[in-house]
Image 1 (cartoon, one colour):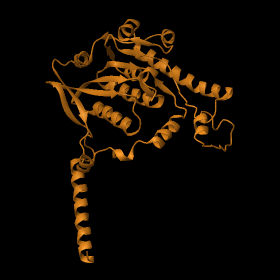
Image 2 (cartoon, helix red, strand yellow; image 1 turned 120 degrees about the horizontal axis):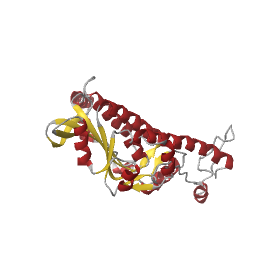
Image 3 (tube, helix red, strand yellow; image 1 turned 30 degrees about the vertical axis):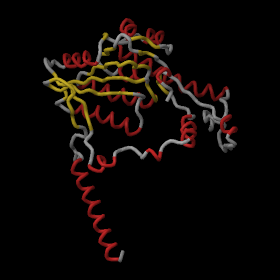
Image 4 (cartoon, helix red, strand yellow; image 1 turned 120 degrees about the vertical axis):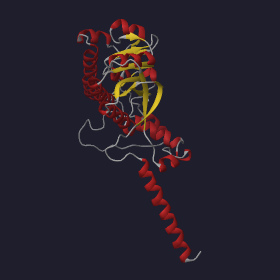
Length: 312
């Protein structure tokens, strides 16, 4: 192919790329517009928003997306109430508190009712405490009020693989909880202090959210799980029921006779629609990646998590 044809092909591809980017921008919300678009779930009338927390407490972009939904719901005058559906064993302490704070601000602006799925424990229960009321199936698993950190010790595994790790440090506790060696008594004491702070914060959130004496909460907060029925009897939840009951209660608190349950969806640009958000499968998996994942998880991380719901 001669030079002119190469140049013509390059210019053609450049025009196509610019066109795709331009159309993609046109399909995205402009500055100042709402990021999220509504899709109906059921019903007719004034809008009640369904917020969904499914799986571990999100991190990164997924967390920011959920926080963005909460902020938009708080500002949108067309959203009269919200229901938070929780199907989660919990997750990171910092992310859980961030969600709780955002949901608390929403609940102060308009009625918010939490609805439990089959598991709403530890951090999953923590975020629900921001709601004005909590509705739970009688057979749901909840509670698990406490803090946990699991640090896989990979020293023996690395030795078997013939991998030697040398740590250079200034500060004798700099490499504590690295997973490369057992914890010393001093390191364990330091880390336990961090966990105690997070535990006390959890207790305060329960006491505030459920209007319970702190000392009563302390007697309930030994990490055990409760059934939904037990949670209602202990004052950890308001009533037995399911998502539809929680949505109806949120509408009732907002003074609505009829309501339409909606959820948020983010409109995709053209390129996102064509390419998607996932990496090709050929780029994922493999023993090396699995080992790398194990090493990443060996870091010290405080979590409000029910271990029966999966450690990771």
